[in-house]
Image (cartoon, rainbow, N blue to C red):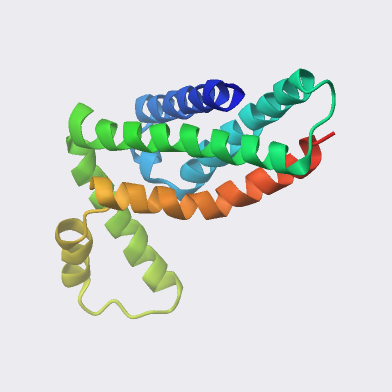
Length: 167
């Protein structure tokens, strides 16, 4: 019950951060820093409170496996719902975000290539790949991104907080 409760609390926190980012500046939704902050900061806070409640219900004793299970499954539930909301926000609530996101990613990708010393001979062809051929906002791509985030930072956060929160 603790896992579900705090999983939904984490989802609400992630959704609130997405909405806040959208209202402040829509391009923030596509920032790597924002994605890490949205994924890690609320997760750490919510999982901490989930572990505190689990510790209280277990009379002050919590094995590492229980703490890890609580941490990981709280993270899984919360970030999954958050990823679904991100998909709905970008594709249905404001579909213009797909174009804005593709342009932002194209600009970021081209800038990274140039900073790493790569030659951008055919800028228009690369821009076309980023803006037309790749769709990072499809449900499958967002879920693939979510699966990747289960390992980093999800698994790392769950392991660290479980180790810290077991007693």
